[in-house]
Image (cartoon, rainbow, N blue to C red; front, side):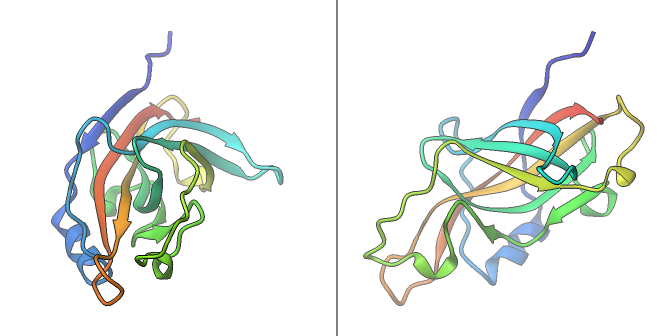
Length: 163
């Protein structure tokens, strides 16, 4: 019998914080109501390519993700990841870094589901527990048109069995 998926929050590493600092300010907020990775499923896209379909949901919509990877269970190090989709924060859900100004009205979908490609050859044998991990950015804003972009961030992961 398969165990149910485990959802958890992980501490963002200093390397993530330093890599993000040059692009945007990113205070950490991992309170229960923030947007988080809520579901992850293995599958294939419309072209038959392997994907992991992920859903983000919370009080506000996801605006960017960073350090999205498939890793060994309880191992958050980049160098041990089986597959890496993105390292640096990447805007998604209809957002871009230049749209955050005092006049911005756009609100992305919430929940937001997307398909992320992966290479199955990089994964361990089927049935091995792996962790889908990402930093989730939300509530991005500028205090004025000349200020730095600030996004709140928290790292989230879901344990699941390799396909």
